[in-house]
Structures are given as structure tokens and as C-alpha cells.
Image (cartoon, rainbow, N blue to C red):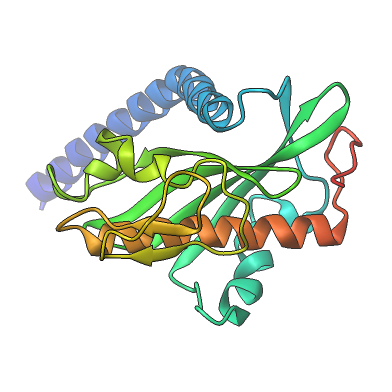
Length: 222
């Protein structure tokens, strides 16, 4: 019995020390990790909306980190295409000279071939697509991964002003500015997932402008 108690005390001591050390490491690293994550987000925002001087979150509980996905869920489901595989996880407004010049919408597309694809989409105030920054992706190298590694696919969206992009597989997609987007050869699933995610971002854009949202800094989205 004494041996059992002794072993239990030793195990407890080891667990206690390990817990204290983990807590200590967490306290040391949490701020640098948070700073690095924020830097990565700001870089992604700037990549898709280079003209903005700063980026501001939207004011109100509906656009908070805890509620924003639910805020747009109904709109994504209500669309004829039904975008329920996508989630809107963050929206910030690009601000220049005290005015909102567009939105950066972060989407998680849940129907990628290799799993979730997370990316930020820039949309100008007049609804023009500005760019996409891939934040995380696990698609097949040389195939679906070309969404990130090759500029050709995303370049097709550039400068288009449309309510919805359409994926084609017959090579009929036009140059930048058209709503038709050619799928990546051999990677239709990945191409479709990203295109639907961009369309989800456009839905969020329309909802926010219709609601006449305001940024945390008091700038109206209009």
C-alpha cells in the first residue's frame, strides 16, 4: 500500500511540475504568437487591398469574432447555390482618408479536396473584386495547390464586378474582369471550392453594405 501511495505522489508531482512549466511557457510565448498572427493578418489584408491606409473591424455584436459566422449563415444558405459549406470568419473595412474603400472578408471554404481552405478576399466599395490571399490550404501538390502557387487561376477574377462568379471547364473563361472562371486542369474540386468561397465573400459584402455597418472607429460603410 505504501508503494502505491508513493508512486501516486511521484506521479502527482511530475504532473504538477509539467503543468507549471507549460503554463510558464504559454505566458512567455502567447504575446509573441499573437503579435505574429496579427502581422500575418495585416499582410493578408494589404495584399488584397493595397490602397488602404488602415483596416478596422466592424462595430456591433453581429460582427464580433464569436457571432460573425452565424450572422452570415442564413444569407449563405438562402442563396440559390447554397453556400453552407463556407464560413465567414472575419470582416474588416479598408479605410483611406477617413473613408471606407472596401472590405476584406475572410472565408473558410469547407469543401476543398484536401480539407478546409482559408483565404481573405478584397472587395472594393463598388463591388469590384480586388484579390485573394490564401491563408491555409492542404490541397494536392501540383494540382489543387496551384490555387496558391500559380497566379493564373486567381488572376482570372481580377477587376471583375459581378454578383457571382461561374466555374467553367471548357476553356471559355475570358480574361480578367469576366465572371467566367476556368477551372484548374485536374483540380475541379479545389477550383470550385475557392470560387464558391469568393462568391460567399461577395454575399457578405452585399449584406454589410445593405446594413450600412459602421467600423469600430466610427467610419460608415457606404
